[in-house]
Image (cartoon, rainbow, N blue to C red; front, side, top):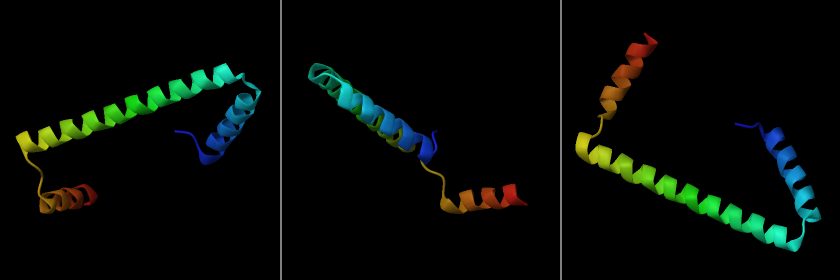
Length: 75
């Protein structure tokens, strides 16, 4: 994962290149970014559905049990 400073620099560099790009290139980049965004949304939804199914099949862990495990790890 990039630091905030690295992200900001990368975004600035991308913006500079975008301003220099042809309109047709901008249209292609926009399409690619939308496709990536949609794929990420689908992956997120799939993960949520898988997690819900896991909870349905295996149940959940009571909060008290989690607290006890944390206390054991700390001790």
